[in-house]
Image (cartoon, rainbow, N blue to C red; front, side, top):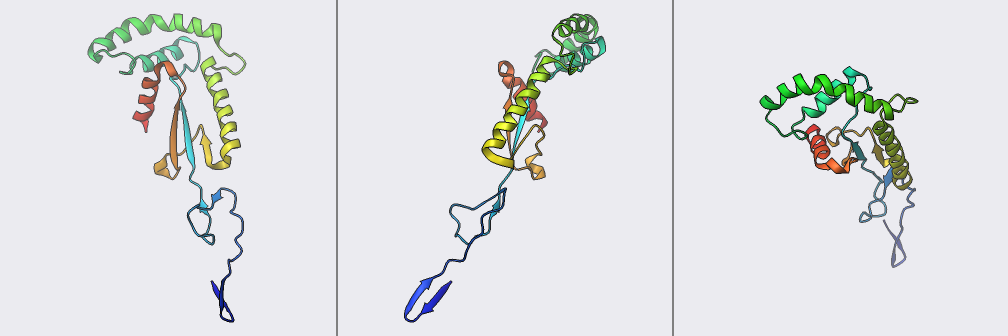
Length: 172
């Protein structure tokens, strides 16, 4: 606003309160522009999955879901599914379950992959919170379509990242 003092015009800048938490001033906006709410950034950690338990039926359910994915086994379903359902899924859950039992986290009753992924999620959430405050959501982000802001994927299984990333893209 301009104030006339005699013949001289002086510019008086109104006092601007600091931006509230979770809001920022736009670098290119005038100083009296109201604060703009920061967009949330969603981080989705994706892994290949794990069985619920090491018993026969949990292993069978997990192996059926995993081995039925065309990105895992690239055979025609009419050839692969009968073989999977009749031969593989009648025997493989026993041996896979025995191997999972050897490494199972009994304290938390979950597979080591799930234990490690939970720990990674917590550490990433801590790191992002230290860097960005409350503007980053880790583990349970909303979709950008639901007003959750931008979405970032982090595939945590590098050996099969195309498989895992493809599945996550398919689910979006």
